[in-house]
Image: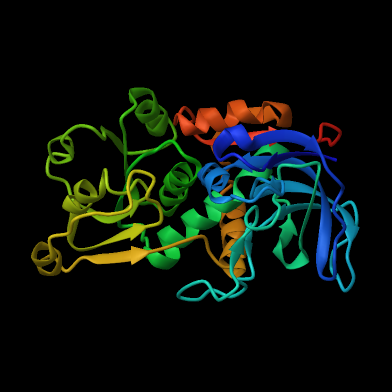
Length: 334
Protein backbone atom coordinates (compact mmCIF):
# COMPACT_ATOMS: atom_id res chain seq x y z
CA UNK A 1 0.00 0.00 0.00
CA UNK A 2 1.04 3.63 -0.39
CA UNK A 3 1.70 5.64 2.76
CA UNK A 4 3.12 9.00 3.78
CA UNK A 5 5.99 8.12 6.11
CA UNK A 6 8.73 9.82 8.09
CA UNK A 7 12.20 8.45 8.83
CA UNK A 8 15.70 9.78 9.38
CA UNK A 9 15.98 13.54 9.00
CA UNK A 10 13.71 15.73 11.14
CA UNK A 11 10.92 17.72 9.52
CA UNK A 12 9.59 17.41 6.00
CA UNK A 13 13.03 16.43 4.69
CA UNK A 14 12.49 13.01 6.24
CA UNK A 15 9.11 12.38 4.61
CA UNK A 16 8.10 10.51 1.47
CA UNK A 17 5.19 8.60 -0.06
CA UNK A 18 6.35 4.98 -0.14
CA UNK A 19 5.04 1.49 -0.82
CA UNK A 20 4.99 -0.43 2.44
CA UNK A 21 3.35 -3.73 3.48
CA UNK A 22 -0.40 -3.65 4.16
CA UNK A 23 -0.85 -4.05 7.94
CA UNK A 24 -2.69 -6.99 9.49
CA UNK A 25 -5.10 -6.48 12.42
CA UNK A 26 -4.34 -8.26 15.68
CA UNK A 27 -6.77 -9.34 18.37
CA UNK A 28 -9.23 -6.55 19.13
CA UNK A 29 -8.13 -4.55 16.09
CA UNK A 30 -9.66 -3.57 12.77
CA UNK A 31 -8.07 -2.77 9.42
CA UNK A 32 -9.66 0.18 7.65
CA UNK A 33 -9.57 1.16 4.02
CA UNK A 34 -8.86 4.84 4.56
CA UNK A 35 -11.09 7.10 2.47
CA UNK A 36 -10.08 10.50 3.87
CA UNK A 37 -7.67 11.75 6.50
CA UNK A 38 -7.07 15.07 8.24
CA UNK A 39 -3.97 17.11 9.00
CA UNK A 40 -3.36 18.46 12.51
CA UNK A 41 -0.64 20.62 14.06
CA UNK A 42 0.37 17.52 15.99
CA UNK A 43 1.54 15.96 12.71
CA UNK A 44 4.03 18.82 12.28
CA UNK A 45 5.42 18.18 15.76
CA UNK A 46 5.70 14.43 15.14
CA UNK A 47 8.09 15.07 12.24
CA UNK A 48 10.54 16.30 14.87
CA UNK A 49 9.64 13.96 17.75
CA UNK A 50 10.09 10.82 15.64
CA UNK A 51 13.85 10.29 15.58
CA UNK A 52 14.14 6.63 14.60
CA UNK A 53 15.19 5.34 11.18
CA UNK A 54 12.22 3.01 10.83
CA UNK A 55 9.46 4.56 8.68
CA UNK A 56 6.51 5.88 10.70
CA UNK A 57 3.13 6.42 9.03
CA UNK A 58 2.09 9.95 9.97
CA UNK A 59 -1.47 11.02 10.78
CA UNK A 60 -4.08 10.82 13.55
CA UNK A 61 -7.41 11.54 11.86
CA UNK A 62 -9.30 9.50 9.29
CA UNK A 63 -12.60 8.06 8.15
CA UNK A 64 -12.88 4.82 6.25
CA UNK A 65 -14.46 1.48 5.49
CA UNK A 66 -13.98 -1.58 7.70
CA UNK A 67 -11.79 -3.88 5.60
CA UNK A 68 -10.79 -6.73 7.93
CA UNK A 69 -11.61 -7.74 11.50
CA UNK A 70 -9.08 -9.11 13.95
CA UNK A 71 -9.87 -11.84 16.45
CA UNK A 72 -12.42 -11.15 19.19
CA UNK A 73 -13.93 -8.13 17.40
CA UNK A 74 -17.70 -7.90 17.76
CA UNK A 75 -20.28 -5.33 16.73
CA UNK A 76 -18.56 -4.34 13.48
CA UNK A 77 -18.93 -5.64 9.95
CA UNK A 78 -16.74 -5.45 6.88
CA UNK A 79 -17.91 -2.66 4.60
CA UNK A 80 -19.16 -0.45 7.44
CA UNK A 81 -18.39 3.30 7.20
CA UNK A 82 -16.67 4.51 10.39
CA UNK A 83 -14.78 7.36 12.01
CA UNK A 84 -11.82 6.93 14.34
CA UNK A 85 -11.26 8.43 17.78
CA UNK A 86 -7.48 9.11 17.66
CA UNK A 87 -7.23 9.06 21.47
CA UNK A 88 -6.40 5.47 22.39
CA UNK A 89 -7.01 3.63 25.69
CA UNK A 90 -9.06 6.34 27.45
CA UNK A 91 -12.56 4.91 27.68
CA UNK A 92 -14.44 6.74 30.47
CA UNK A 93 -14.39 10.46 31.25
CA UNK A 94 -11.93 11.19 34.05
CA UNK A 95 -10.00 14.19 35.43
CA UNK A 96 -6.93 13.23 33.36
CA UNK A 97 -5.92 10.58 30.82
CA UNK A 98 -5.12 7.18 32.31
CA UNK A 99 -1.75 5.47 32.13
CA UNK A 100 -1.25 4.02 28.68
CA UNK A 101 -3.10 6.81 26.87
CA UNK A 102 -1.70 7.39 23.37
CA UNK A 103 -2.65 9.31 20.28
CA UNK A 104 -2.84 7.53 16.94
CA UNK A 105 0.08 8.37 14.66
CA UNK A 106 2.95 8.41 17.18
CA UNK A 107 4.53 6.35 18.59
CA UNK A 108 2.53 3.86 16.50
CA UNK A 109 1.63 4.10 12.82
CA UNK A 110 -1.11 6.51 11.83
CA UNK A 111 -3.64 7.21 9.12
CA UNK A 112 -1.95 8.80 6.08
CA UNK A 113 -2.04 5.52 4.16
CA UNK A 114 -4.36 3.45 2.02
CA UNK A 115 -4.98 1.15 5.01
CA UNK A 116 -4.70 1.66 8.77
CA UNK A 117 -5.04 -0.68 11.75
CA UNK A 118 -6.78 0.71 14.82
CA UNK A 119 -8.37 -0.69 18.00
CA UNK A 120 -11.98 -1.70 17.40
CA UNK A 121 -12.89 0.23 20.57
CA UNK A 122 -11.84 3.47 18.85
CA UNK A 123 -14.44 3.24 16.07
CA UNK A 124 -17.89 4.77 15.77
CA UNK A 125 -20.30 4.91 12.82
CA UNK A 126 -19.63 7.75 10.38
CA UNK A 127 -22.11 10.57 11.08
CA UNK A 128 -24.43 10.49 8.06
CA UNK A 129 -24.69 14.28 7.80
CA UNK A 130 -20.93 14.61 7.18
CA UNK A 131 -19.24 14.25 3.80
CA UNK A 132 -16.23 11.93 3.61
CA UNK A 133 -13.86 14.92 3.68
CA UNK A 134 -15.57 16.33 6.78
CA UNK A 135 -15.67 12.94 8.51
CA UNK A 136 -11.97 12.36 7.92
CA UNK A 137 -10.75 15.58 9.52
CA UNK A 138 -12.82 16.44 12.57
CA UNK A 139 -12.19 13.85 15.29
CA UNK A 140 -9.00 15.01 17.02
CA UNK A 141 -9.91 18.71 16.93
CA UNK A 142 -13.58 18.21 17.78
CA UNK A 143 -12.88 15.94 20.75
CA UNK A 144 -10.27 18.40 22.05
CA UNK A 145 -12.67 21.31 21.54
CA UNK A 146 -15.59 19.52 23.20
CA UNK A 147 -13.68 18.61 26.39
CA UNK A 148 -12.07 22.05 26.65
CA UNK A 149 -15.37 23.92 26.29
CA UNK A 150 -17.78 21.71 28.18
CA UNK A 151 -16.04 19.21 30.48
CA UNK A 152 -13.28 21.56 31.59
CA UNK A 153 -14.62 25.02 30.76
CA UNK A 154 -18.22 24.45 31.86
CA UNK A 155 -19.53 26.62 29.02
CA UNK A 156 -23.08 27.94 29.52
CA UNK A 157 -25.43 29.71 27.12
CA UNK A 158 -25.13 32.89 29.22
CA UNK A 159 -21.33 33.00 28.86
CA UNK A 160 -19.07 35.10 26.69
CA UNK A 161 -16.10 33.07 25.44
CA UNK A 162 -12.82 34.33 23.97
CA UNK A 163 -11.01 32.15 21.42
CA UNK A 164 -7.57 33.51 20.48
CA UNK A 165 -5.92 32.47 17.22
CA UNK A 166 -8.90 31.55 15.06
CA UNK A 167 -8.11 29.62 11.89
CA UNK A 168 -7.07 26.15 12.99
CA UNK A 169 -9.42 23.20 13.30
CA UNK A 170 -9.93 23.16 17.07
CA UNK A 171 -10.60 26.90 17.39
CA UNK A 172 -13.02 27.00 14.45
CA UNK A 173 -14.88 24.02 15.91
CA UNK A 174 -15.05 25.70 19.33
CA UNK A 175 -16.56 28.71 17.58
CA UNK A 176 -19.27 26.51 16.04
CA UNK A 177 -19.87 24.56 19.26
CA UNK A 178 -20.13 27.65 21.45
CA UNK A 179 -22.55 29.39 19.09
CA UNK A 180 -24.85 26.35 19.14
CA UNK A 181 -25.08 26.70 22.94
CA UNK A 182 -26.14 30.33 22.58
CA UNK A 183 -22.91 31.78 23.98
CA UNK A 184 -21.37 35.06 22.78
CA UNK A 185 -18.08 34.33 20.97
CA UNK A 186 -15.12 36.65 20.47
CA UNK A 187 -12.16 35.54 18.35
CA UNK A 188 -8.74 36.98 17.57
CA UNK A 189 -6.40 36.77 14.60
CA UNK A 190 -3.59 38.81 13.07
CA UNK A 191 -5.16 38.10 9.67
CA UNK A 192 -7.95 40.41 8.49
CA UNK A 193 -9.15 37.68 6.11
CA UNK A 194 -9.44 35.15 8.95
CA UNK A 195 -11.28 37.66 11.13
CA UNK A 196 -13.74 38.23 8.31
CA UNK A 197 -14.24 34.49 7.76
CA UNK A 198 -14.78 33.97 11.50
CA UNK A 199 -17.50 36.61 11.50
CA UNK A 200 -19.11 34.93 8.50
CA UNK A 201 -18.99 31.63 10.45
CA UNK A 202 -20.93 33.18 13.34
CA UNK A 203 -18.44 34.93 15.63
CA UNK A 204 -19.95 37.93 17.42
CA UNK A 205 -16.69 39.91 17.36
CA UNK A 206 -13.24 39.46 15.83
CA UNK A 207 -10.27 41.52 16.98
CA UNK A 208 -6.70 41.96 15.78
CA UNK A 209 -4.35 39.78 17.87
CA UNK A 210 -1.50 42.24 17.40
CA UNK A 211 -3.49 45.23 18.65
CA UNK A 212 -4.66 46.35 22.08
CA UNK A 213 -7.36 43.88 23.06
CA UNK A 214 -8.88 45.99 25.84
CA UNK A 215 -9.29 48.97 23.51
CA UNK A 216 -10.80 46.85 20.74
CA UNK A 217 -13.23 45.20 23.16
CA UNK A 218 -14.02 48.54 24.81
CA UNK A 219 -13.44 47.07 28.25
CA UNK A 220 -15.68 44.00 27.74
CA UNK A 221 -14.67 41.03 29.89
CA UNK A 222 -15.35 37.35 29.26
CA UNK A 223 -16.40 34.35 31.35
CA UNK A 224 -14.18 31.82 29.58
CA UNK A 225 -11.00 31.86 27.51
CA UNK A 226 -9.74 28.78 25.70
CA UNK A 227 -6.07 29.50 25.08
CA UNK A 228 -4.34 27.49 22.34
CA UNK A 229 -1.63 29.93 21.25
CA UNK A 230 0.62 30.03 24.30
CA UNK A 231 3.05 32.63 25.60
CA UNK A 232 2.32 35.16 22.83
CA UNK A 233 -1.29 35.71 23.96
CA UNK A 234 -1.45 34.30 27.51
CA UNK A 235 -1.36 37.60 29.39
CA UNK A 236 -3.68 39.35 26.94
CA UNK A 237 -6.16 36.50 27.37
CA UNK A 238 -5.91 36.60 31.16
CA UNK A 239 -6.48 40.38 31.14
CA UNK A 240 -9.83 39.88 29.40
CA UNK A 241 -11.23 37.48 32.04
CA UNK A 242 -13.93 38.55 34.43
CA UNK A 243 -13.11 38.16 38.11
CA UNK A 244 -13.65 34.50 38.89
CA UNK A 245 -13.43 33.58 35.21
CA UNK A 246 -11.84 30.47 33.75
CA UNK A 247 -9.00 29.94 31.30
CA UNK A 248 -8.60 26.50 29.72
CA UNK A 249 -5.33 25.74 27.96
CA UNK A 250 -4.44 22.97 25.53
CA UNK A 251 -1.96 24.56 23.15
CA UNK A 252 1.39 26.33 23.27
CA UNK A 253 2.43 26.78 19.66
CA UNK A 254 3.79 30.26 20.45
CA UNK A 255 5.84 29.37 23.52
CA UNK A 256 5.65 27.02 26.51
CA UNK A 257 6.63 29.36 29.37
CA UNK A 258 4.80 32.42 30.69
CA UNK A 259 5.19 34.91 33.54
CA UNK A 260 2.31 35.06 35.99
CA UNK A 261 1.63 37.75 38.57
CA UNK A 262 0.46 35.57 41.42
CA UNK A 263 -1.05 38.39 43.48
CA UNK A 264 -3.20 39.60 40.57
CA UNK A 265 -4.17 35.99 39.88
CA UNK A 266 -5.40 35.08 43.34
CA UNK A 267 -7.07 38.45 43.92
CA UNK A 268 -8.90 37.88 40.64
CA UNK A 269 -10.07 34.45 41.82
CA UNK A 270 -9.23 33.05 38.38
CA UNK A 271 -9.35 29.39 37.39
CA UNK A 272 -6.55 28.03 35.18
CA UNK A 273 -7.22 24.54 33.78
CA UNK A 274 -5.25 22.28 31.49
CA UNK A 275 -6.91 20.03 28.93
CA UNK A 276 -5.89 17.55 26.26
CA UNK A 277 -7.94 15.42 23.88
CA UNK A 278 -10.70 13.52 25.72
CA UNK A 279 -12.17 10.12 26.59
CA UNK A 280 -14.16 7.86 24.28
CA UNK A 281 -17.21 8.65 26.41
CA UNK A 282 -16.75 12.33 25.52
CA UNK A 283 -16.11 11.36 21.89
CA UNK A 284 -19.57 9.76 21.76
CA UNK A 285 -21.09 12.81 23.44
CA UNK A 286 -19.38 15.05 20.89
CA UNK A 287 -20.71 12.95 17.99
CA UNK A 288 -24.22 13.25 19.42
CA UNK A 289 -23.76 17.02 19.79
CA UNK A 290 -22.62 17.62 16.20
CA UNK A 291 -25.36 15.36 14.86
CA UNK A 292 -28.09 17.06 16.93
CA UNK A 293 -26.96 20.53 15.82
CA UNK A 294 -26.02 19.55 12.25
CA UNK A 295 -22.48 20.90 12.73
CA UNK A 296 -20.05 20.62 9.82
CA UNK A 297 -16.35 21.37 10.36
CA UNK A 298 -15.13 24.38 8.41
CA UNK A 299 -13.04 23.05 5.52
CA UNK A 300 -9.91 24.62 4.06
CA UNK A 301 -8.42 22.56 1.19
CA UNK A 302 -8.28 18.91 0.14
CA UNK A 303 -5.01 17.36 -1.10
CA UNK A 304 -3.99 14.01 -2.52
CA UNK A 305 -1.44 12.00 -0.54
CA UNK A 306 1.28 12.74 -3.13
CA UNK A 307 0.83 16.45 -2.36
CA UNK A 308 1.21 15.97 1.40
CA UNK A 309 4.29 18.21 1.58
CA UNK A 310 2.27 21.11 0.16
CA UNK A 311 -0.43 20.52 2.78
CA UNK A 312 2.12 20.45 5.61
CA UNK A 313 3.70 23.68 4.37
CA UNK A 314 0.29 25.37 4.25
CA UNK A 315 -0.29 24.47 7.90
CA UNK A 316 3.25 25.41 8.94
CA UNK A 317 2.71 28.87 7.42
CA UNK A 318 -0.73 29.17 9.12
CA UNK A 319 -2.33 29.65 5.72
CA UNK A 320 -5.41 27.56 6.49
CA UNK A 321 -8.83 28.52 7.80
CA UNK A 322 -10.53 25.33 8.95
CA UNK A 323 -9.43 21.77 8.32
CA UNK A 324 -7.02 20.41 5.72
CA UNK A 325 -8.05 17.05 4.26
CA UNK A 326 -6.41 14.25 2.30
CA UNK A 327 -8.50 12.25 -0.17
CA UNK A 328 -6.85 8.83 -0.13
CA UNK A 329 -9.43 6.57 -1.79
CA UNK A 330 -11.36 7.94 -4.72
CA UNK A 331 -13.57 4.88 -5.20
CA UNK A 332 -16.12 5.53 -2.45
CA UNK A 333 -19.37 7.40 -3.10
CA UNK A 334 -20.68 10.05 -0.74
